[in-house]
Length: 242
Image (cartoon, rainbow, N blue to C red):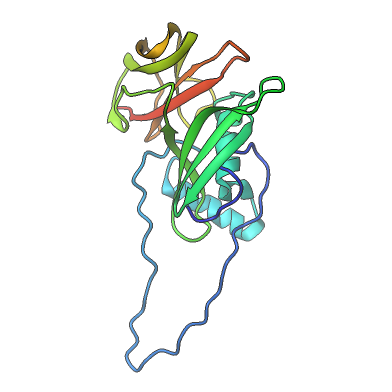
């Protein structure tokens, strides 16, 4: 990940654009060979906020010309905008920690219950999407621990009804499954709720969805109810059949 702006996830808001370091260019030799920057390869499913590299490039143009939505350059703000804005998990409003290396970032987002230390609800994986030093951050998945989402396989082509499964460690959990896409505000489908709990115990649910048009569709598993509505979540990505 390029621009390191405090912890991934932060709700909407502006953060300064990236710092550009200009280095002197040596005088060309008698037979110069033009050098071009290596093209950044995007190896993941584009989940949010952009559905294509063209859409990310369109934002870059708007940012360069008028400073539009600078939060796309901050993995922390992007992660929190994903949780509070896209997923509508309003109570998951803290960036607990973050790790940024090159073009990838892992942002721990969470909440504070009463006077307790912050709790981590999910670790969101982000990657730079597009070309240039001002390529925006894109949510591509989560790093799962106590709540995992292993079925469907990441990037698989899947249709409705969809079987969703994983493992969970917890007590008296109720797992909700939502299917969403970046271009649509409403959920494409919901299944609620699967009773679960124990130590690394399997869980599964079936969800029906319709209206998937984006290249990648987000499958979200969430649980809570002890301190607040959502206390943990995990996501994966599927491709809907044409």
